Length: 226
Image (cartoon, rainbow, N blue to C red; front, side):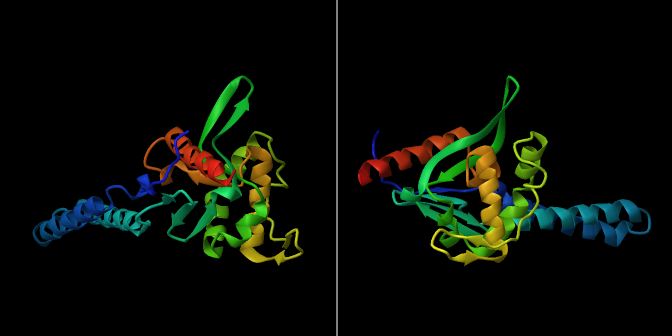
């Protein structure tokens, strides 16, 4: 396999058209405000609805613009994930495999809208993720927990948020949201084979395309190490 030596920056689908939506909302609000100055008494309720719609449109656009410029940065040395609440970064030595998340139910193979990342050690998370992002990921990945409970991949008790301290192999005790995220990652690893999960909304193409790209870099890094 050809070694990958380029830095690739991926812009999330969630950020697409943010400026366009925001400007559209402001322009529409300006037009509606002009209409209100002439027709407020005759059409108060329709105009009020239009104002609220414009405000919601602007809010959605601003949320998109608040997303990081790039959600994922792939380099020959590491894989970095950016989120408006923080980031994580792992070098390729810390990653065992990257895969699309699937589950077989009977004879049906269900594909979930996530990329799964299995680490060589879950303990790498403790030093590689920001606290704010760890806390946020617990909530954003609730659909995965709920799916696992529904498909009986984990028990209901295992799916409950666990804030018990997490003890690393070297005896270090992790507490708070980071400990909860480590427990959370451990449970999802048992159920779905990954410690970290990237939603399809953070990609700019298909899950399979990203998995192929990331595994190309992973294979190249392993070749360099060995």
